[in-house]
Amino acid sequence: MHVLESLSMTDIPAQDEALRDEVRAFLREALKDVPAHIRARSWSGYSPEFSRKLGERGWIGVTLPKAYGGAGRSAFSRYVLVEEFLNSGAPVGSHWIADRQSAPLVLRYGTEAQKQKYIPPICRGESAFCIGMSEPGSGSDLASVRTKAEKNASGWLLNGQKIWTTNAHHCQYMIALVRTSGSTQDRKNGLSQIIVDLSLPGVTIRPITDLSGDSHFCEVFFQDVQLDDDALIGEEGQGWEQVNAELAFERSGPERLFSSIVLFDEWLAYVRTPQGHTASAQRLAGKVLARLAPLRAMSVALTGRLAQGESPVVEAALVKDMGTTLEQFIPAAIADDLYSRTDQNIPLELLQTLNYTSHVAPSFSLRGGTRDILRGMIARGLGLR
Image 1 (spheres, rainbow, N blue to C red):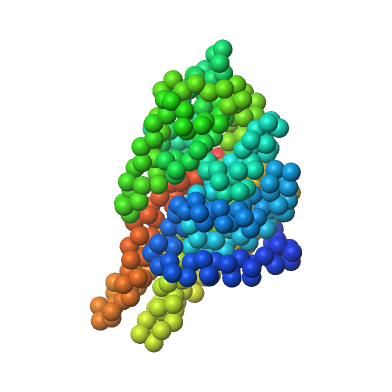
Image 2 (cartoon, rainbow, N blue to C red):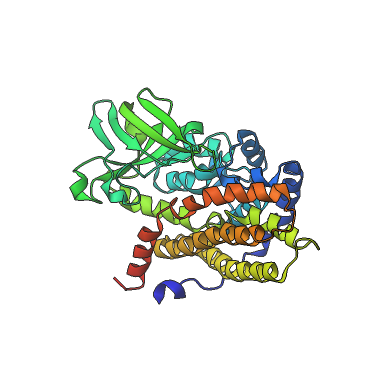
């Protein structure tokens, strides 16, 4: 039970918790006219203007060193910010990935020149990054990626394809996991990470329309894309270690708990009215909150581990798997509740929010690692395989 025991109860420090009131006041004003079915998109939402406003307040890159434009605060301060952004349904997709994992990755593995070039614009909310991991035929089996960067006299020549790349059509850069030596039979050996300027010749980005009608997922093609020497981030051949450290950031945050929270809050407001209140709805609300509270405690504990410089890969997989299970349960359970009310007029905004969340919910257990892959990692961590 080592994995579970490592997630001990952790309190958010008072100086970080103190951010919450200011952030809530800002978000109430900024989002007062945005309907729930739009706010439900939150970290898939795209608003460069909103990201720049957050950058002006120092709320992007808050954990990064001041020398690179960050605020030099702890991981708990970012947790508070992210929790409030998601609970309010703020459109944070423009800077989300860059803030969550790209900038910390560059800070940890990048050269000084890379840090100076990439991190300050991220902190200002001016630079967007996407993640180049999944490929057709690979999915969550990252060790089988076939996209290749070959060394040449000018740097690196990139060829291949990535898929399910969130907001690639809106981003300036991608951090991609590619093969720089060997073949797919070598699995984890010979993989590296590179930074790709998506404006370069040979890069083609095609958005993919999903069930909800949105098109934030993309497929990205590379045909003889010439990269400079400094495109390589970290050590050549160390990409597997680096990408797993990156995934700990991706899988451990509140976004793996709160993807359905705008819907839940909209439904809860209806249930609290005389028309919407029923005993069964009250029990459902209690069931959701009883599952959410311990999951949030686990997520905060993971933040404590990250704040100590650790990379809790298995623990993050556990929280991500349990969190996305709850995220998918919420729209399904709310649909059962609302569609059983044949004699009531359900608010249109609530139904629109339910419609969007229900359509996008299948992706919750795919993005950031599929459920089967995560449960394999958890089983190994528990010594079961």
